[in-house]
Length: 112
Image (cartoon, rainbow, N blue to C red; front, side):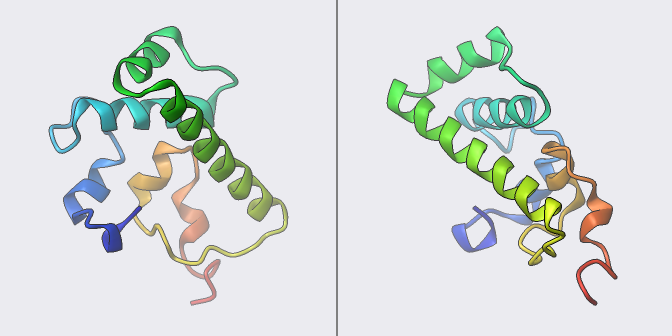
């Protein structure tokens, strides 16, 4: 998701600290907390999983988990093979949510 999907610059910038941010509804904050927990740890804390279960159906939780896990796997794959970023997420705060150092996307890494 990004600008092409209708996200505003403010929403993209708010990804750096989505908890309690009024630009996101509770369902979105729950999904972002879930994604961050999965990206930085090996398990999801009970309080986060409870929030996700209140906001999503069982099938949606499975889909959310699959999408987040795929993105984490793809990011690790690209880093392992030193595949350069394609400039899809140039906002440093967005990257920090998922534990990715923003300097990885700064020139000369991107070939600029």
